[in-house]
Length: 184
Image (cartoon, rainbow, N blue to C red; front, side, top):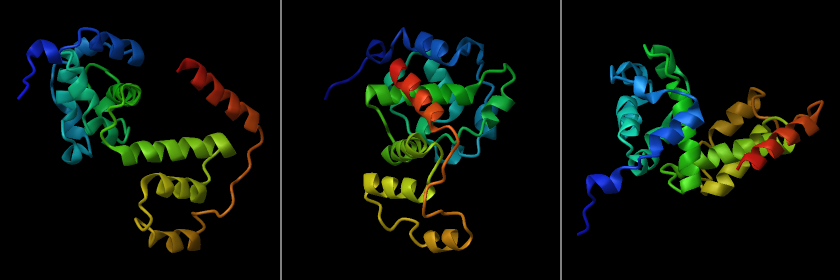
């Protein structure tokens, strides 16, 4: 059985990459735990937020990018508002998700599929077309009957349009996506 040594798990550039991507000074985190104590989704995480921060400082790239926590983060920014050192933890989690995608380490594929369906809808229509986004998500995940019982309720309340809404300047949205693709 292969074992990994501490040096196998350590990536000396990881901290620097995350700091540059997030424009945050991660060395200011002293593990007070306020981020974890306030996080409404901590119960679902495999690794608590404060431990993610410590693992970042320790250069444990693979473990951090393979965690479910970075994908389950709702970006509610409670962690950011509670940080006494003014570290934008939610922004760091966002940077980690992007890095995990590039590294092929997506621990929660349904979350990634939801993001992809959302962005595809925005790119195509200029804003979210809810029914189309859900159809795209179902096609990607094969989860045909998940939440299907909610559709009639949402339709009845006018929360699920059957046709996409138009926007005034769709070319501006296209330019945003083009700029994003140039940076990849």
